Length: 119
Image (cartoon, rainbow, N blue to C red; front, side):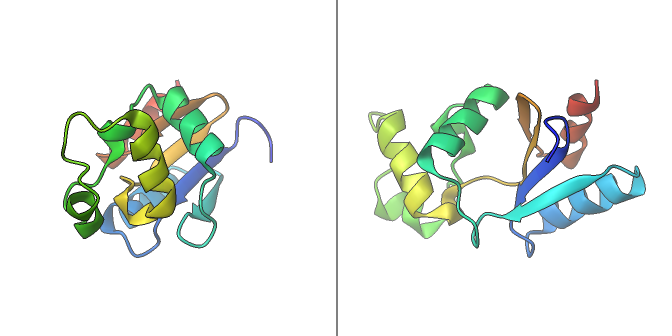
């Protein structure tokens, strides 16, 4: 894979992910897809992607997931390291889709945010 090729981390059944794929296809953008439930992100990769996007682990938490409450992640004193561990162990906690291009990444919510990677 070329360094500037678009890589989409997604859950194929996610409505927002499907909207993003449709937008990229309509724009004629060549991209690769990774279902991160089938091919989970390693802790290191997740940390790197978040750094590229300028996001903290807390900013990508899906707060409506049952694991969010069960793991006590709403507590503001929970460390980024513990949140990273939870995101790796419970991929459903990760906001999606996340799009990477080269050394930049974006949480594509709304999906139009992906266009910032084309600048």
